[in-house]
Length: 456
Image (tube, rainbow, N blue to C red; front, side):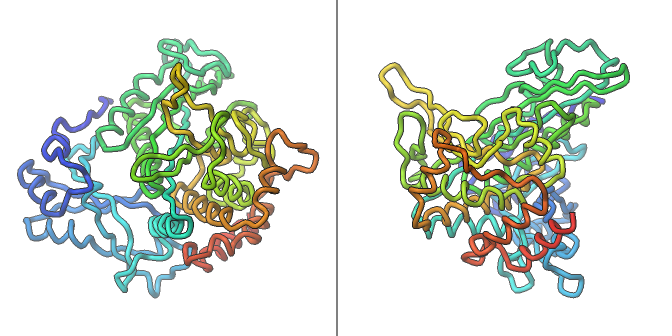
């Protein structure tokens, strides 16, 4: 099957201005000039997957109505927690600044990402998009800072071992290059495609995980990673799902399997979804912390909140049974509730910051949250992180908490992470007031989560 390639005329080629300035009028003009027959409204469902609603506008009037006002949808099918069929109408609300051309569509298609409104025209409380935006706004109001995030997207590519020579080695894939990995070309194409969609990146590379086949017809799996760049929380969540979307499309076109599952094989490295955080100030990220930089008040609040609420956040960041198996086997996954500089076994790591010969920092210092995995719902998880930072900001015993949970402290009484859905439910029940604060997570939404966790 031929590999699809991005449309040769991107929106940014026609309108080189900043995306934040794109309007409905700009998109209508673009669709008309480029003769684009289809428009697709893309949004995130309650399950954490991207959804689309497609249109073939018959004239400019219909096109303008779609791009300006969106259209209705069945909320009870998209967000089953807290909605029922008797009152389920919602409205998809387009955001013109998010538009891009679908690089995989057989027919030229303009994609516009959307939020969700209820029948009253207000943002839908159950929508993951609404939840992460409310949390982001509350964090700024409560602490006076904006939190930026980036995700490290790990994924496995699989192909039949008897289809082509395979040169990899068991658990020796880190930074390997072709021909010792077969997925390098796909990873690189994905990076270019994501850049063209407007998603900022840091880098990509092959990862440690490499699973050799046990029989001739088995799949050989190799692991890769694409690390994104810092964005506001709602945009960072969208970037994760778009990255998964791009990877799956490219893998399908090549006849490969693509897995973001926490584990593809036991006793092998799994797919984490580590997040790095930094504080933004006038679009210049403030240093967080590392070996050479004292912890800022914002960094202390974030670390304290994650140490306290990390177990509860597993409801959003570790959603499958094999999430516990990944953590239980170690392999650079967190094993206890702790934080520390350069410690890959800690829940929270303070990575080293590259510096010039004179000691000048050449990159933004970040705080890495290493608990989530490929099963994570990024919108709900990042909303939870924002609420955890607000919680940490208000902790009266923050200093004692940080002293007790530091990786260099005596860990004899260190708390362990939950090892079952039942234990995640206990943690969620304990910290639900922090998640519900500021009307970010609706109580009925948390009730439904607790019911599901306790039935697993």
